[in-house]
Length: 453
Image (cartoon, rainbow, N blue to C red; front, side):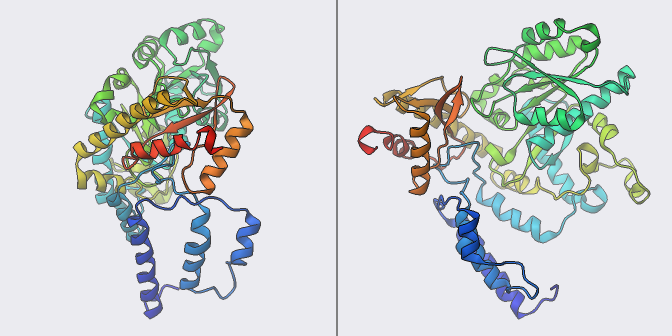
């Protein structure tokens, strides 16, 4: 399997041709899921004793499996949070895979770690973090939030001596589900703070003072959100930071989606207060044009994370010499150097190009809101928040939305999934792709017209 021969060369060329063709697709085909029964009927058994051969396995992927996956970089992929990696980032992801880099430690990957740290430094500077801030790239927001909260609990336990006490996390009732999952994994409690859209320091103060003293003593972290996934809302970070500072509580900011807008000068003021946080995350694979999977986790004082996360073992002793080991800053050991494609794209295009690209999507979101307002059959529900617009089709039921969404995907015209707002089924555009145009928005809105139904 590891020999370099003629078959390997043929397969190499075939894979590279496919990769280049996929990168060049403008736009890519949207595609969509198929049932396992249908897929199995088309491919049969793929794992066999003697193998299918590389070209046949590649054919199965390109002809059957890939078309059963939705292209998240399609310019009319408006559901969830899409992705739009630059060609430079995607191409360099091939290099990272081919280079067989283990990004665990400085010993194994000094050059890769230095480059990743440069990319992390840019993000830390955007947030106004101090010069000695630092962190690591992890797989996604769930891993980033969990790792930050493990660090926060470690700091609390060291300061309070409550090593056997079950900790308590405060967060908004609209926070991402990964915060609840982190609490579950850590066997911690979580208090969802009621708030009117965005959480404030006053909301936290009220929630904390309503608790018994014994429970107030258990609070080890507040998780604020800078850009909720569903609505794009940003908590009042300044007042929350003031509450945390006065209460000596760790402040973590979940900016997995929204903190990318720190790169846009027009939006920077929305994040005032993030510079006072103890940690924050942002996913470059969402709105900073990196391929999946890539989340940046950054600490104000990374030495706290090293205490919480460093793994100890005889064979790891060679790593304990004061150098920067990415494995020390999150809940992981082995890791791919997943920040390198992001670094390469930043180095290739420059940070000004990133600012321009984010500004472009923010401007298009405002345009989308204007087009929705002009539509006689649509009604906008909220002002645009970051790159998200929430609206509804007048007179539609939940079944109408589901049918329309399915037809839109099947025809390849777009991908817009219904969501909920205050219990009502509605539609949502999330725009993070700089190649998306006003015409793309118009095309989707036109399919909502009564005569089209």
